[in-house]
Image (tube, rainbow, N blue to C red; front, side, top):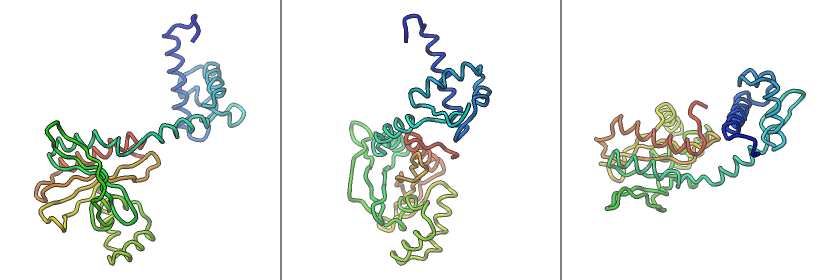
Length: 248
């Protein structure tokens, strides 16, 4: 910023720049100068000048005469940010909040081969709700709420192969996963501890892929709609920090 440029003017230019980038993102592959000018309310000459400056930096590309699209520089920056995102780190605060609300254990699971592997689990200690990194607790994908969430996007062929490997009926598994997708979470009883029930919700990344499942373990008589909503809300918070936008 030059000495002759006031802070308020710089902020205004930045606001216009962000508006143009947002408009190009919403338009998709490319948009004409006329379109972005109308969408942003900027005079064509103003929009043209800012778009040209953005093109110099690689944030915008000219896709044809008088048309623009987002540039590869944004992809490079996005990939840099994405590489720093760790679902285990991003899950800590939502997991603590969910444990504090329900008083029940909260865990984060990822898929490892044909099993759901618990990698984080909350505990109530003197200095508050702690999230401990653990490795070891496993459950078959088709036999646990956490696992069913992790495979809820699988194709029919993948589910058929999994059912065959586990000696279960593919039709039954398909029906269960339809319910998981419809409800936004899965619920199971625990065959090892009959008094316990596990509910799990998906954690989704910026590409729409389920990368983890967040679970809440409760007494089978105590899971209620309020806790189910809180579980889905906590999973959605983690998904949002990973770049997922609801309704895509």
